[in-house]
Length: 63
Image 1 (cartoon, rainbow, N blue to C red):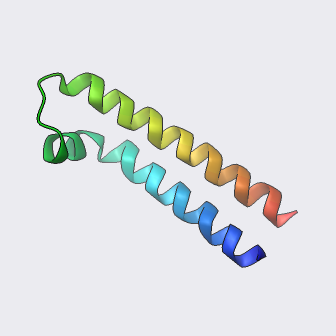
Image 2 (image 1 turned 135 degrees about the vertical axis):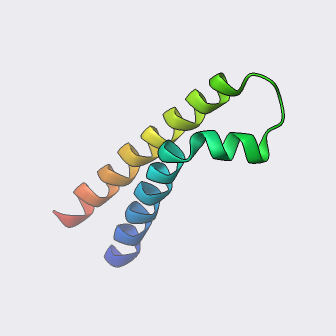
């Protein structure tokens, strides 16, 4: 069980980092509406929250 939670936290962190760094490319590829800046900001916020959640899972699972 412990290894699965570590893996889940690591995957959440990795997806969060990808959302932050590739937000503009993801928005251009999947969303076709005009306000690209707001969608990019939303993706970056979602990525940041995923990193926080993944880090909390890893932190409390190691201890």
